[in-house]
Length: 88
Image 1 (cartoon, rainbow, N blue to C red):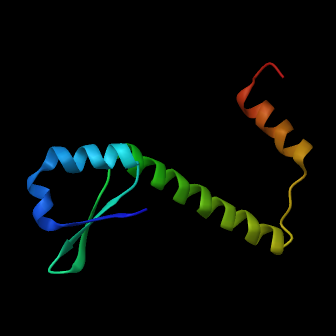
Image 2 (cartoon, rainbow, N blue to C red):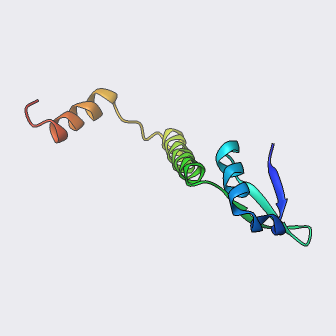
């Protein structure tokens, strides 16, 4: 469940930090009853960035499938082996 806190709670930085790490999700900060900031741990931020990257790559792959741009798996792996494993 999302944590929503007033901006005055930022005075207690240790509590907000502990909450971010414990919940492993963003804490939404409001100012005058409206959304103003989002605070999260670095681990949560990096996880969100990684998920965003995966979603982008999946969208590209789905578009390539719709466009009929399919690659043969054996050819792809053979090319990778040649590129990265000089002895193969």
